[in-house]
Image (cartoon, rainbow, N blue to C red; front, top):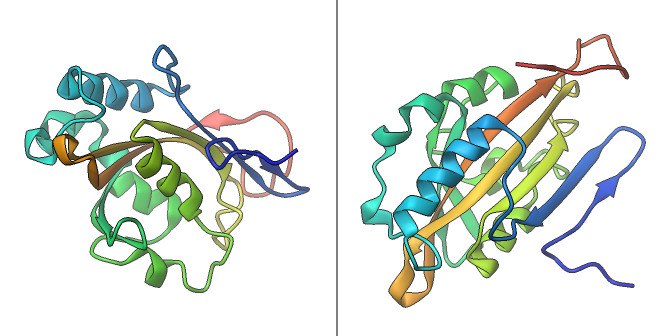
Length: 183
């Protein structure tokens, strides 16, 4: 049986990677995800998603350190990191602001998957992700829940931006199993 692109669990010995499109009544697991979803839902009203010109990033200052805003390039062939929160930098060990997704992860083929971004674009709905950072050397112990939401021109059915927020959970760098703690 083939899995739909909108729901693809991948679990191997050292990797966790799961995602799915949120149902209308579903909430993401983390507090940052819940806050972003609430803001996004309020801004979209009865449309599929809100228009980019209606989004005020300052309205989300409480979660900004855990947020990434991506410009969608050529329908999703690539993504430019317009904004990269300081908490993302601390958790990943680098600042991706102003960098193209393909350039940033060129040497990390198992890095953040286009699949989750494309699922967000094609569904026009929020996508929840749970995964580890095994694709970043020295950050293998970082696990996170993320929420991607589409923003763009609802009347033209064009997603022009993705807003992502992370709720990080980490293991001690020397710990390979056992209980997790929130960052």
